[in-house]
Image: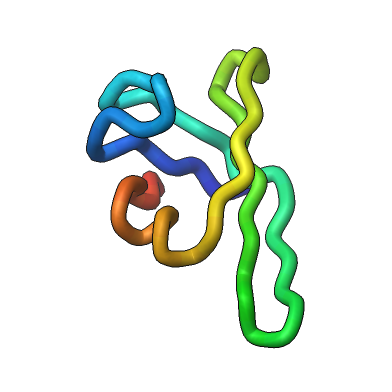
Length: 59
């Protein structure tokens, strides 16, 4: 499972918050991603542009 870290404050969430990528979908060239916080308490749905701008992939 891919893990991401928040680079900037985003939608009321603090910088540095870790997320798991739960779902990835594409419809007519538009990608949507569903992420959940590491403790699974919050869920956000974002597009590809927001993902690349605000999140960093952790390995």
